[in-house]
Length: 106
Length: 118
Image 1 (cartoon, each protein chain N blue to C red):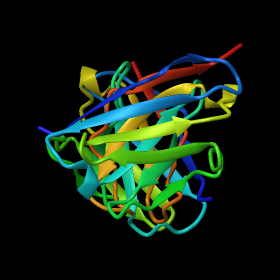
Image 2: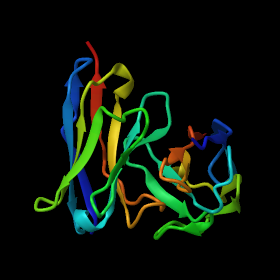
Image 3: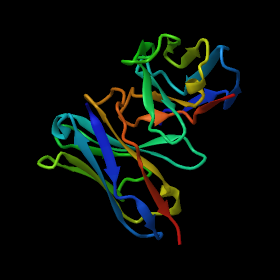
Image 4: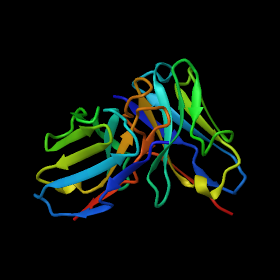
């Protein structure tokens, strides 16, 4: 099983600031990698696929990079609606795995 | 608009069974790769089961032999039959789709709560 480790577990920031979230895979997943946002009481929402491509409707203040084992999600100029939990996911093989999540809080 | 609506969750005793349903609209379940993913308290998201367009299924090791994913093409619904439930299965269960295997999941349903407790 490919283990994904997200850091930090919690990130405390203010609106207008920038955020950097990290995810490390226990083995090479190439660019078969996604990021999801989950707001309280809502379903997960796809943000990024293919390690760096924004999903439809995702604001350009969200950007992502990485390949292989190290991946980063960056959010510039945080808006109030960005405070949520973020999960990374690998789909390099059919035993899909997710990270444990990073909580972005005010 | 593509939508997924889950139902069937509830409170069940350890060792019991439950069947979850996921009704799709705006797309055809049969031609998509449909999956169940759960979110347990204090834990991250966990992939549970998937069904290919061709009907093949696969399950996470944690549920293999206990859970079965299936679909009803006429009703455009995906099911998750859960047997021999344990407290570790307590979670919100989400239905989601992908255009094919080995891709990302989108969109997701709102989820249905399953609580296993005596």
